[in-house]
Amino acid sequence: MFSFFKKQFISGTVLALSALAAGCSTDVDVYKPVSAPIVTNSVETTVVWSASVGSGVGNYYTRLTPAVDEVRVYAASRNGDVFALDRETGSREWHIDLDDEDENDDRRSARLSGGLVLQYGTLYVTSENGYLYAIDAEEGTLKWKAEVGQEVMASPAAGYDKVFVLTITGQLLAFNSETGEKIWANGNDGNTVSLRGDSNPVAISDQVVIYGTSNGKVNIVSQETGVLIHQLNVNNANGATRIARLNDVNSTPLSIMNEVYSVAFNGNFQGFLIPEFSSMWKRQYSSCLDLASDSTDIALTDVSGHVYSIIRVDGTQRWANTRLTYRGVTAPAYFKRHVIVGDYEGYVYLLDDATGEIKSMRMIDSSGLYAAPVSDDDYLYLQSRDGTLYAVDIEEKKEE
Image 1 (cartoon, one colour):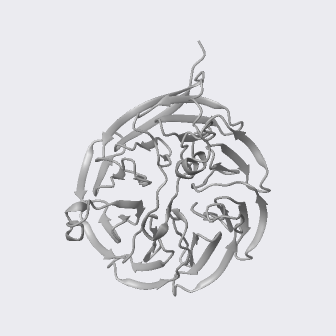
Image 2 (cartoon, one colour):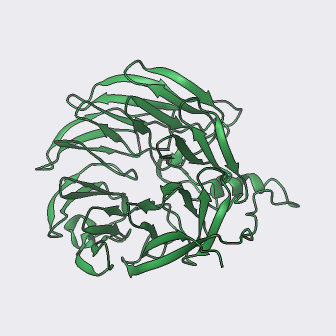
Image 3 (tube, helix red, strand yellow):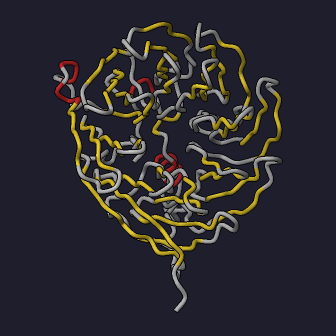
């Protein structure tokens, strides 16, 4: 149900806001999830392997996503477990429990919250306890840890020689990627009311780091100095109440060559050109989830659970799928000419990337899917709320 957290940060889920709105009526719950659609599958999904990666995230608003390289897939649970699994078989290669670290002794758990991020053989993950951890991806040993000093929910961003962490108050910090030494800290968005959750920062080359803010902007910051170079205005706050005026950019900015795309809650979806800092186009969509892209389009899940495909070049809508209204739909991913999303009941849906038609749905895990799917050239990786990781493959059904 609806609740306030530390420093009045509001839970960043549509279900929480929906519960508040629904409380105004005793007759009809307009935010009730629709029933799972009936789909005649024309695409087969195969679970290649599944493996436990700890206790998962439970009912917390924690979007821990797997990371993958040519050999392994890495996954973590909120309580501190981090695993490396063979990418082809799912067999365990190593495990480390960050809950064993001294700073977590008097806490409920390690409360891992942001990651996993893989760069140059090192895994990075952050925690709500205010720590950044660097783990050797080959050996599974802790290379270093750094105290951030504030709660962190966003995934870190790894550059060439620095790691960037965004705290829940909007402060951005840079750490040396080899030693964990803090280099600089900058900024604070100043908002006392915002969605619980943060835009993940994105490191672009060795020049800038970009991230969304709780006041409707995307900040562009120098990696070297931490100085704010520019702000892109994604959305302006409107409305009579603090809830109505929420316009957080919780979605991670999407960087493609010299383009940046960003969407705000209660607001707009925009494409920008960098370094001109000019708007390519602006469209009315509202989301707090990350975007996905292929060579021509951007996929977006909005606050109602509707999934859209937007043409990058001009921002026009290729298609919309509205069959999953209020089903707690995840952020999308592209995989083998499909847009993939999951939902709160644990179904995974394969939408045709050209039409938006649901080509297949399958119950994967009844504990539910919350984090966005992750894909490589071979498999789709889905992590359930209870901590089971699935490697899935798909293929068109053969006509009989």
